[in-house]
Length: 322
Image 1 (cartoon, rainbow, N blue to C red):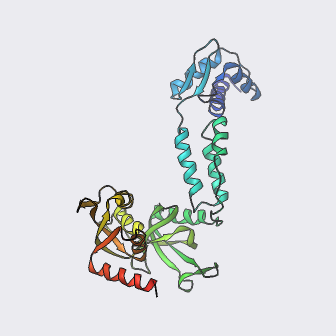
Image 2: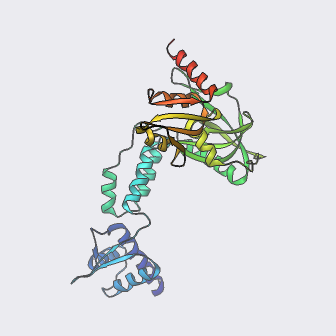
Image 3: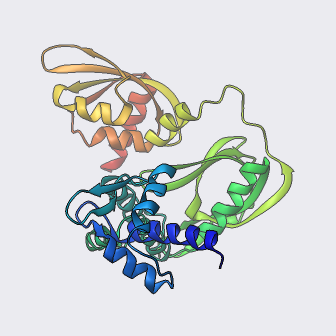
């Protein structure tokens, strides 16, 4: 190994060591760095380490120097700070479509973005839930669909549902769906794909973890409509699920404003009606999910219009007590 290669290797090993073992609470000394380099077969002297650290700093690495009789060093700004890593770790842990095996792999990768000391603390607070799915084929499904989106092609697949005995069965007697995928979406810890369904003759959503035997097709995807707004589609479909879209008026007790904003966002139209209540006007899908969501507030949220929604809601309430 010539001198220039040795110097480059040494600087990389110094960076590797600081990333792995240093943080604000655990700054490292030149002696510790030298001992690590020696284990890697790279002997050097104390004068080269500060030079290497200056080179790393010049390259943009945030190496913080703690001034003292024996200077100490640690990596300051990392790609991800600990609070950011916690958010990502919690997302993996809570996800209902990432299997235990894949969760463990992803967690180890996230832990690796911190120092070994921080890693132990993050791992101690992490616990993989036993409610996660066991279907590892979701990653193959995702890869095939993602490739189809990139190449503008269709895919075919079967779609399963659960029977009363908890066994899986294909919908519509194993019907082979032909689908033009547009985009993946994560909603309430479930993973969906949005696209044009030949069977439904419209844009539809499918749960990725319930897609089975997906195949890439050579047929070009049905183009996304020019006026299609994915944001509006998601707000309408994912907030209240599929059904006929309609503008509804709701009258709510004042303490439900937080519920309305959580569900429809701060931009939703509201109007104070009296000192105890306010009115909401928004678009939803008139589906059982919407009516079920409305029912949980036990009269503190009332449906005012349209008439078709009032009639449907009344029918559902009557059927529920028969």
